[in-house]
Image (cartoon, rainbow, N blue to C red; front, side, top):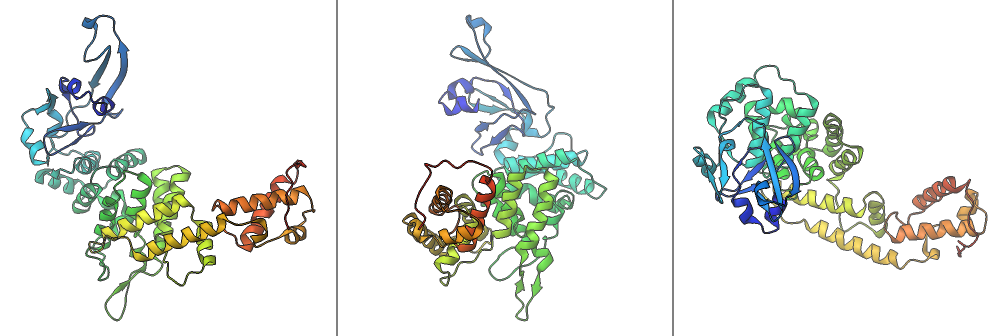
Length: 413
């Protein structure tokens, strides 16, 4: 249906009478809605072609979309109907006011976390009585099933306003059951460069990641969890958090396991958290930049920069891209330009080094030198002696039992 709307068939959708759910829509304060369907709330049974008009339900040319919902309304705006281009129902004022209120209260911890997720998804103001009920629920023992917890966290992180639900969990006592590592940062003051405590800084940094990217938003939310372990107040009264990124990465790794995320996503989130404090100065030589690039590929660098920008926005005081990062990007461009013009003779190792490793002069040695040169040009590895020797050793081990074609060839002098 969302695709139908985007393709210009708004008139078709305006004629659909559709019960909505807080899980399946994002409201706009103007009174219009953007309809988003999820498999757990609405069943999309596909398009069917009909020969007779009387066989069709809601029609798009010769196609029909049949929808049904099995969920009972949870919040008041669930009972609204979108028909003829407008929302209808007894709780229309809640939609217009941006008010999130349950129909029958919050009965258990699952309802409470679901309500927090809806708060982030809609960016509506939670109802006072619902908040009181959440607070009472979180006074008792709470245990969430891993799958349910992971699902609700995803909803919060990929919502239009993650901070809304996370602050609600903080205020009601639920945060310690959902993300205890983040709960430890509540009230943890920082230095003069930050307007907020570590918790608020973290959730606002998450908000500042405009793209609904789970990896980036997780990294933004968790990047300072290690500050609870490393806070030190200096003689001048300023708080210091030396090496907090190391502890943050450890906490993040545990959280990734709890969320049961795939290895690639988990690894990248941990990488971003561990390296978000990279500090470039004008003293960096070309060699230092190459070493930096040896552990940070192009995509990772862009993600790190995005995270750093969000980090500054989340501080409440600074939002522009640090000059040092701009200088680093220029330095990287210059190093890559230099490396794109490299020849084999410009590599920091030569044929004699390979012969000392066990290579014999001939096509095989030429092949490995060509491959090393290409990887350096592509920015995959740095033109550093230790790195090239290690790469050559891996190449030798990988191809030791394979036949090297004689036409690979190439000079290595």
